[in-house]
Amino acid sequence: MDMEQGQNHQNQKPPRLGRDALVAAICGLVVVLMVGASYAAVPFYNWFCRATGFNGTTQVATSAPSGAPLERKIAVRFDTNVAGGLPWKFEPEQTEIEVKIGQVVTVYYNVTNQSARATTGQAAYNVAPLTVGSYFEKINCFCFTEQTMAPGEKREMPVVFYVDPSIVSDHDNDTLNTITLSYTFYPVRDATPKPLAASEPDKAQGNL
Image (cartoon, rainbow, N blue to C red; front, side):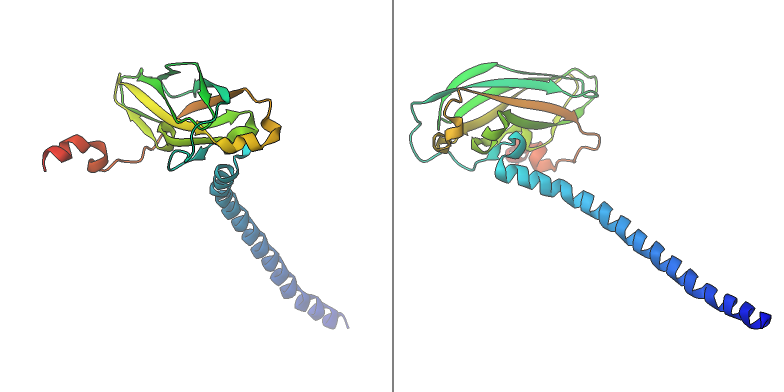
């Protein structure tokens, strides 16, 4: 009888080990899925913000509005910041301007690399109030790409934008009179190498 119980006890061990292995495999799969989802969430979040203007993310326009600017005017303020680790001086040429809704405007920012080495930065941006993001349209902006500055280089960087006339149909913005456009430059540790045609257009054209 004792021998039979010992044999039964021994026969029960393999199924338990099999269950443990199955649980471990499932946990491993869950971890892999969670890591993959976290990476996928970043581009999805960025796309969502660009598409909806969520969190004050501005829009990208391919052309100017078709109609004439409206008579209603809005003040646009410019706020600039540089994150730690990037030795740049970054400031707008004008801290505030007044624009007509639908008017295409070009403003300039002055950037100086105060380091003795080449450095690269990428600008993050948003507008306030946050609900205005879906109406703030940029046609051209230095924030679309990484910016590499030579040692001691000074550069003028433009932004071309307009406030979408459809904002007047949003009655939540009837009392809106000021928009603040904010930029923060962050350091880029591993800068994307630029092809010769992009980094030296004048030289390439001169060889034609």
